[in-house]
Length: 313
Image (cartoon, rainbow, N blue to C red; front, side):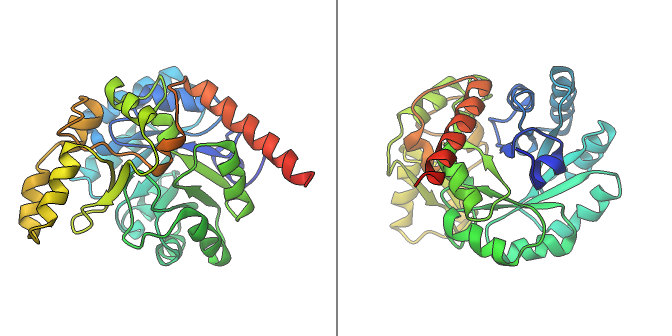
């Protein structure tokens, strides 16, 4: 399935495994890359030397291309970028910041740069900054989201209408049917997150993976928009946030309730009551925990089957 995305990353299939905090370690990224897609290590939950260790282990586990996702709000951003260059990583996905800050610096060092956006406006800014491709993510996605609440299947054709560089769709994509729909709407490839959370190789706690498998429609909600919009599974912590909102809280009060390391506590340590449990709305269609290779095989099988069915309509 050769296209602009497979050619850009030198991969077999136009699928990217999202670089998610507390989920996307070297085991997940290398398994994804070995399956013919692009694996990403999620640097957002790693201290610099931990990231270096994951990159080195990933290089030993695969001879296929892989990349690193870097939220640009990271406090040790220069050290992170230096490690990426030192370790000869060739692909970087940036998010949560201005793409102009690092794109040229990375490209001057021979690195392919992709930026994650949530709107047409920011997609065009990323293109202007010189990125090689854009991930346009709808608000169905898990984790931190844009403020506009534009859904994936509305966002993709609007971005496609104005963008010249390759476009990757993200948010609510966990099946081959959704992958086909995104590409029919103009995406050159897809980024899949939540489905890979519930994989054998994900670094998430097993208790969190099981919560994802058990999730139903309506079990997630976008909240904490005043800080940074985040989609969470409804649990004790989520309910505490909603109770606080009834008092018209200040930003300081919201920050105090959030505290530190909520996401680590929930997704990595398995505290299902007091942790942030970040996952996309599509969790309602995820019913099992599978090896990455099987997930990729299922995606491609359903994609090709759905494409044949559409042709015969």
